[in-house]
Amino acid sequence: MSIFEQLESNVRSYSRSFPAVFQRARGSVIFDTSGKEYIDFFSGAGTLNYGHNDERMKRRLIEYLESDGIVHALDASTTAKQEFLTRFRDIILQPRGMDYKVQFCGPTGTNAVEAALKLARKVTKRTGMFAFSGSYHGMSLGSIAVTSGRSVRASAGVPMAHTTFIPYPTGPRGAFDSLSYMRHLLEDSHSGVDVPAAVILETVQMDGGIYIAPAEWLRELRALCDQHGILLICDDIQAGCGRTGQFFSFERAGIKPDLITLSKSISGYGLPMALLLIRRELDQWKPGEHTGTFRGLQLSFVAASESLEYWRTGAFETSLRNKEQLLRGLLGDALPGLAGAELRGIGMAFGIDMAQAGGYERARRIQQRAFQNGLIMEQCGREDTVLKVMAPLTTPEEQLVRGCQLLVDAIRHA
Ligand SMILES: Cc1ncc(COP(=O)(O)O)c(C=O)c1O
Image (tube, rainbow, N blue to C red):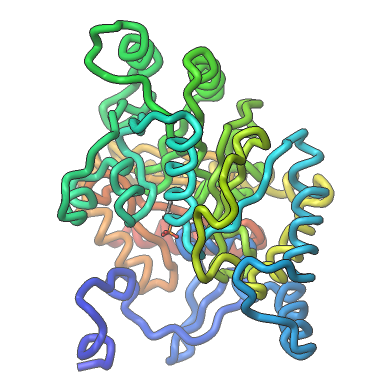
């Protein structure tokens, strides 16, 4: 029995999907202890948008450590944070006309979601939330309350309240007119539902199975929130940092949410970091009102500052558009072997939905076969029927082609 089986809690999950002991990684390739090579179509669930061990970020980190740069400072001001904030303002916020304050949260995504929910309630003095069927926002209690999956909700062990779930405009049951439904709930004084503090959404449901909210729908949602004084929280933890083709996932709709959560790829290097962006007028926190010991691992700031350089010019976005087209073609070519399967995707987030093509069992067989072939990918969506294709954004085209070949081979033989 391995040390993992002997000692690590039963709660472990990815080690079951990817049964190997990993040792090294570079760019979009991971190596296990036997030296076997895997192409990464997983990206650490959205954390490695710039691949593994990016050379420039690694250099900066090594230099920082060698200079005895401060590693832990709670939320004190440091040169590493100063540089990150400056670049984030100059490269990301200002060019997009975004006037937001930055709150550094505890190190994982769910901390940023908790901060967003708490701040929305504080500012509006309301308790309720609107969230969407198919959503995933994290595993702490506030985040679970706005997460739709029954098994996740059951894991809380206490009643999950104060959330009204609205069907997403697109999903496994087809299109739904969620705007009319929300209008009805908000405008009928006898709807039985109070006006919420906020609507929390992913503009692309990632763990939910790669469902994409239409741009026009997002604009109308923004207008509806404005009309009723409801805050709009965009959870960009997985869809942000370029995954959908632009830095923020909502840019394609030309909207500005009131609160934006970022984590996963914001540090660039796979180091823990989570942010809440707050529309300036809404920054009504009192000093220390929401704290935490790890609000700013300095190494994360160092890598994050370097990662933002990818966005200084438009070249990276252009490369993402080209890779989106390439992937759409390559994955589309795989579909004829999969009667009933559906391909959905935007940017470099793609899903092959197997619900009508053999369901979970077939999806699992393909995922496992792909792993044996040397391709790492995960399953998502209801009952895990969707094969999720999420290569690092920096993956060279020839590796995208190679990874898709491994996937096609797995489809043929599973
Ligand atoms: C959209 C979204 N929100 C929140 C989270 C929670 O982030 P974390 O697992 O870092 O707490 C995730 C994680 O997958 C996510 O995809």
